[in-house]
Amino acid sequence: MKNPGFVVAMFRLTRFWNLVIVALTQYCTAGFLVSSSTLTDWRLLLLASSTVMIAAAGYIINDYYDVKIDLVNKPDRVVVGKWIPRRFAILFHSVLSITGTAMGFWLSVPIGLINFFCAFLLWVYSNQLKRQPFIGNLTIALLTGCAVLLVEALYHSHNIMIWIYALFAFFITLAREIIKDMEDLKGDNTFGCRTLPIVWGIRRAKNVIYGLLGVFALSVIYLDVRFQALPLIYFLPALFLPLIVLTVRLARADTIRDFYWLSQWCKLIMLLGVASMAFLS
Image 1 (cartoon, rainbow, N blue to C red):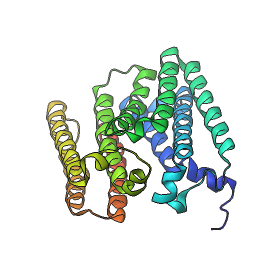
Image 2: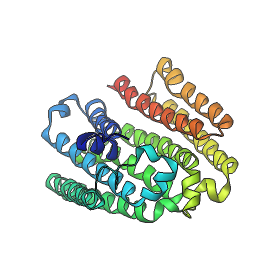
Image 3: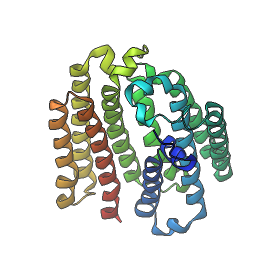
Image 4: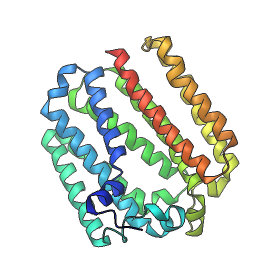
């Protein structure tokens, strides 16, 4: 394969577009759920930058530990050890983690502590937790929800909708992480990982996702009725229709391509959720 170049390799390694979604989520949360004036606040820029740095560091250390597994699951997307030396990957991870944590402390001690905890937890996840059934999935889901709650930690708006969107991010990410484990089952099984699809099998892992989506849907309905937050014209086609499609396609999925499609579909649902914030302003 032709060398993609250092910049392109780093974009692949750090999942550039995923980082864009993280920053977009925090900006939309602040702009739509706190105040539009926050969009020009240097503190929000610092917060988003620190979160993106820690997330990028997490992607790097994850790929660092998973080189052998990724060579089985997705050899065309392996970067560490092929285009970027392993020692440089560790250096980039350390610089990004330390810088992101320091920027958090510059904003406030609580945010700094949260950033430090997230950076540490991402390292533990990559080294140990991701190879365990469900706990690794739960870890990433919690960290995703935490990215939304960091906006509340910065502005103290006491807006219940921020917590609701954090819950939304948690459930969708948890479902997506289990689906990704299904996609990566071959490589994970080869190297002794004990993910949910390996321990329980694909069918029972799917049942877990059905249960998560059911709890999520009921929670959304309750919260929408309770707070009357989203207009029905957006609420049904932009959230429940994609969830129905996800459920139907999941029931039929049995190939790596199927599970990859479902993983990308979960990203779309996440983006639709972020876009729905515009209806609350």
